Image 1 (cartoon, rainbow, N blue to C red):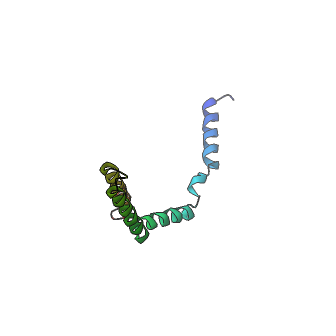
Image 2 (image 1 turned 90 degrees about the vertical axis):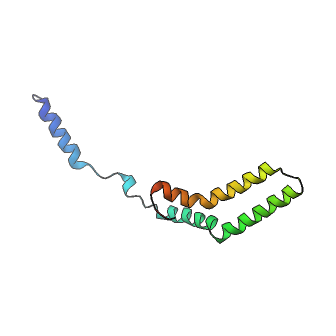
Image 3 (image 1 turned 45 degrees about the horizontal axis):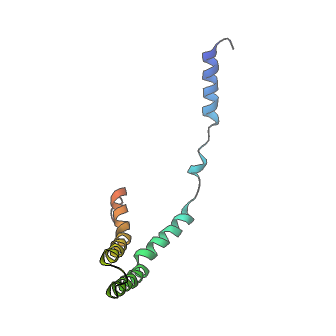
Length: 99
C-alpha cells in the first residue's frame, strides 16, 4: 500500500484479465425473430389481403347503411394502408433496402 498508483494499475490489469463478454451477446433470439417474422409475413401476405378486403367491405357496407360516417371509414382505410406499407417504411428507415 505504499504506492497507490501501482495498486490501481495492478487492480485494473486484473479486472481486464478476468473480463468476460456480456451475456446479451450470446443469447440466441432466432426463435423469437422467426415468430415475429411469421406474423409480419401473415399480415402483409395473402392473409393480410383477405383481411383488408373484408375490412374494406365491412366499412363500405357500414358507411352505406349510415352506421359510421365517412371520416371513420377513411381512418380504417388509412390504417390498412399503414399496415401494408409498414415493412417498406421500416426498411427505408433502417437502410435495409427492400423489405
